Every structure is written in structure tokens, then in C-alpha cells.
Length: 171
Image (cartoon, rainbow, N blue to C red; front, side, top):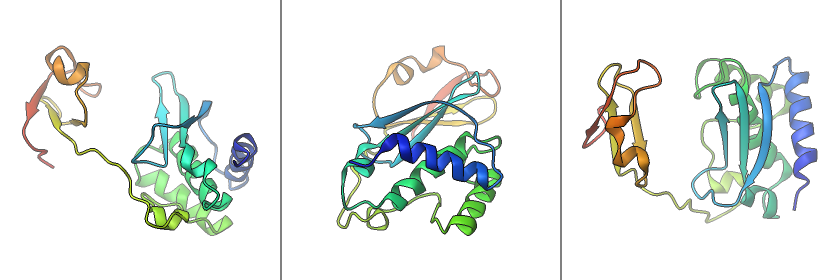
């Protein structure tokens, strides 16, 4: 297994050396349940971020340290100011890291690109779609949860209006 803490330190140093200031990362975890993603950056309301990395990247010997670092830096860039989504500042930061260090940070990466031939993510299809009645924000869920059962009790974080259930996304 790769040295997770050492990789964290190296990745943060490289991001700072490139002139990019990482956000407030308070927790790193190895996600043993992730089947359809390599990593995840969760930004809390107080600005703190939690980064999760799929265990397969750290435990499978076929995955190189560089491929693992691609994902870790990808998630660090999400923690940066303006790093939401995969456009704008995030894309600019990714291009800086790719040029300076020769990484291949991009929006999505296949298993083959990580060194895992014949790797297929076990993705569940989205089964529940909800649309904000105010701003049109779409919320999608793959599994039944409190939100899918009681969506009328929730309000949109962007505009404060209620949600309605829709059959298909109107994107």
C-alpha cells in the first residue's frame, strides 16, 4: 500500500509551489466503499474541506504513485477558492499543475488511465430527480434517502425555494 500521509504532504507542497493556495483541508480519508469515483472533495458550510480517496488507488500495485497523485491534486484543487466544478478556476489550476509537473489532471479518468485495465466502475443509475421551483437547480439521487422521501421539507441552498420531483432532468 502506498504511503497515504506522505502523498498528501507531497501533493500539498507541489500545489503551493505552483503558486496555488489550497483550501482549508481538515480531513483526509480512504474511502473503501467508493465504486464509481476515484476521489471526492466535500466542502462544508464553514469553508473546511474533507477529501476522500478511493482505496483501490492506494492498495492496487498496478496504480502508479503519479496516477494516485493526479487524483489527490484534482481533489485539492476543488478545495481552492473558486475550485467548485471542473471549469473556471479549477480548470486553470489543473492546467498549471499539468504544465509544471507533467500531470494528467482532468475532469474524468478511466481505469485504464490509472493502470487498471478492464476496470469498470460499478455505477448505479440515477433514479430520483428533483428541481428547485425557484432557481432550477437540479438534485439527483441514486438511492432512496430522507431527501427522496421528504423532499417537500427541504429548501434550495441557493435561493431558499422548495423542490419538486421531475421524471427526467431538464438540462
